[in-house]
Image (cartoon, rainbow, N blue to C red):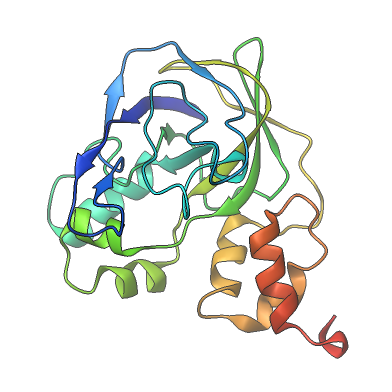
Length: 219
């Protein structure tokens, strides 16, 4: 895989968020962009310097430091929705090409450039702000049923990212739980929930949700 586009957003008004502003409108930049661990949710924001996260209660922080989405999946959405979707349209920081982001295994590590290391840690769920931004009727249901969510990554080692950077995947765990599996388990396929409980690299909120819904007999 490669980084096709690096995207950052500024705060803009919205009627679709409780805080009244959103950073979902990501625009491509030429780079390089510095990437570092932003800190806990509620205190930290985006992992990309210059990128704005507005709703700190629900977004940002170390477990959502960087959001990646595949250009191939944006192209598929273009066909389904009958409209153009530029890089960054889903609020992603990294638009990738050459591989499936939704099939990334939780805990696998992405090496970019000489220093930057990111770790796949959770999935993305649709929210009111996302639906309002796209303006598609029934978007949350459509997105959930399609189950191609992309991935959130934490920062293991800080560095810089630029368009064109190769993504070298290393240290892939053998449990086989992908971000797509996490998404399906926590939405429409609860039978998959037991697979999430012991995935150490999965973000703690997702693991807690799985634990609360899985009985000891299911494990």
